[in-house]
Image 1 (cartoon, rainbow over the protein chains, first blue to last red):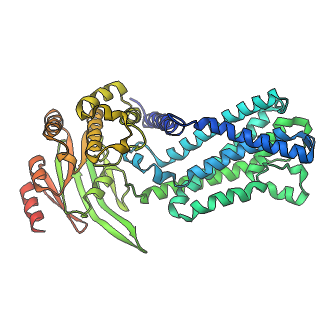
Image 2: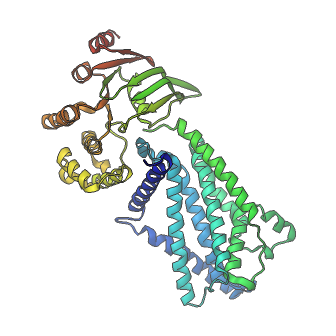
Image 3: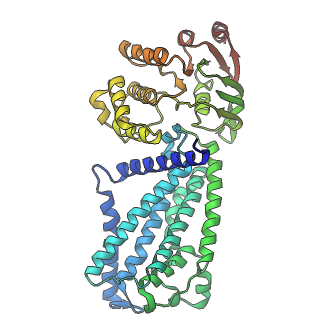
Length: 261
Length: 215
């Protein structure tokens, strides 16, 4: 006799994979070139910004190649931006699936995020290889640190999605605020800056920005000794964990009042 | 068995709350054919959604000790942008069924033909109901929740529904919501009248119908 837990796990796996396939079919399938854009947009952005910076500032910024620096910052930011904006109104949009009890609303958040993460990781690899072929991307000096940074970045993004998805059902103001907030956080995300370029007081404050910490780790892993990095692993992890727990509790609460057509 | 205890449901309305279901206690046993009677807006669909777990009660509890279908109605349960086949594939996956068998049954039962490869949002409500019916029959539940749609489609389709649901699956439980007394009288052996959020259960369907007609 199968235990309740393993039966639950089996159903969960089934649901997650079915939702992933469904999402793939609606997003990337059939007529559009969805996935291609995930790769093309950061590639285009990194190249254009790289070209402009190169013309105005020269080939290197603080000793690292500009194009790879922009690309390595921008791809995680695109992941963050699209995961966050896609989690707004997620439950209402998927309301028809609430007819099937084995699907829990947390599954929607997880599936959307996983898909974003996988496609952006694939985009990262493709962009990295293309730029490497042109001599514009380094071989990661410390792949472990790089992946650790990517992992923390992704975990923070997921945790935030878990909070935003239920919050957007509680208040429609959020829908308008999210894009602005994402833009405003760019200076604090480490996307286009490294901590070592900043003043000590700002460096200290940046410890409280999980994306900035994760980005430092990724840059450290990418450029190795060419850059000086300052980061904490514990603070961003703890902050993400708190967000995640808060988000799960909010999902539970929102589910009770969710009106399904 | 499905056990509802002290179930209440309210929806936000303006600045306040409007209570649609005001305390329903109900036990549905295996094999029972249970009718829910009520005028438009009495809360039949809401109650069916609560029993099916689509929405959660504001207070009270609902326990399901048998497999219960999703509410079969004119909408819901499908992704409009996906085709009938895609939806069938999705449902086969989440319920852990073999897609081929499900597809064969759906093709045969729904008689939707080539329409099955069109997005579900292009279906008429009757066609959606056929698809929902076909899928839920293919999955085999202990209890079917049916919201008004028993009389959908032409004679031929109705006959098929009758054979599949009332002859081949005569041992299954059924919860049927309708404002049509004839439907309830024909199919149910116990009934409830919903009025102003209050529910009264009658073991005699004819008595329930008498009360309902006097509302």
